[in-house]
Image (tube, rainbow, N blue to C red; front, side, top):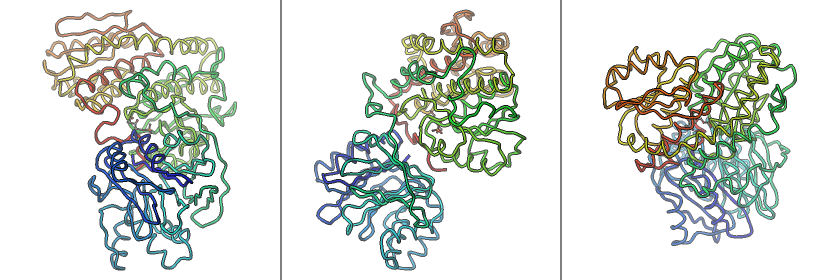
Length: 609
Ligand code: F6R
């Protein structure tokens, strides 16, 4: 979703903030803009196209200065247009904003009464005019900004500049992420650290409802009450190379092929002979889960699918009941919280608005503890949870989540083993066997990736289809859901995942020779049941694509394509059988010519509700 970059320096900041903006493209956007302060005047350029077009405009028309802000916009209020694109300007002020000002209509009406005329349809311009309005009854821009921020409801991350304060960048956050990058004689702000890695590795993370006044040599942070906050700087654990495609055509492809190493990283120094080390979960104590009686998982999208797999594992390995909810549902239902309950959130970004809101709600509902499984250290979820399990997938740039998902699954499995040990639900021998299986995961992942060419061939048959069903049983059912989500979000082929046993309760009506049916069929205890479901499809002329284990090869025929994959321990099947489905979606998208890394209408980090 929207991206912010800003800089104050003793050199031209335009190239820095434009590079930062390109590095935020992955978040998803539909327009972009830049504003610098040049000879005491704002120079503002915008586009409804890509950041590359903005960069060309800057080259052609010139735009430079020692102070500047830039933005990629993902439309919420008003269509993507240059008028609605940020930065917005009102008098001496220019503003970029991420998030949603919920009371913008009331504020707009009040400001209109005071004579303000709005050019755009955005809530951002309302916030800007409100700050401008408060300048009249304030001694400083800081005071005006605080007055305005105390009046708005909703979420924001902002960067604001003032014509009469050439070296000063004002910034604030509430509900949307913002980091301050520290340079030598220059400082920066951005929506995430990736934007600023070419210029710094040292960051201050703004907390909720904090305002910062950033100059070339000083950062002053305060709360919305104006009281000073002391902040510590931290070094980023990513480097600038994290967002290079290397020899791959797309980030998604690179990230799929990075999975052996991301899984290896997730495991590094976390396994003993028959236990997962306690320090794998930051903040955890030896007996944190001893009295645990209930688990509630909350997440969105792909991370929700990881949670669904987690339910099977937690119930099987720890014998603790586990509930899984979509975050946007959880936050508006009246959940009943059992005794000694653990609230788990799962998120790649750690900034997903609904997941974060659910965590904040859970904290008022009587859960014993909260734990987040997250890929971004320092993110809001990490900072607000009692315990953290970092997935260590590395930066994920492709909008479609791939390596984040498989490392989330591995993290859930490790967490299940930690809980099982503290609850005594598994013998040391059984834990040892599972850990030995887990150790094989990175190398097995390589074997699954080696089927890439076969899957490319399959995709060429598949890419012209308009609809598709994905079937799985048991713990493979969430993997069928994930396979369908991956295919639809990047290739735009309509796909649905079903529990194979549900077929005859409705979806079987869709089966004919034009309906491809993908079956996730590793050799496991439910194979016999799944074979019956496969026969139901075959009997109705459906075209079957079966991802199968070598051990138990199902028969291919004119109606049935079988892709046999390496044998693997049953516990690893959900992780490994995800890989061919990611590859299938990827190749279909490439064949269909879609924008693989930034599919239409999607944002990487969904920071608004
Ligand atoms: C799909 C995808 C999304 C995210 C969802 C949650 O490929 O990436 O469904 O999984 O938006 O995002 P996080 O995990 O950042 O909370």
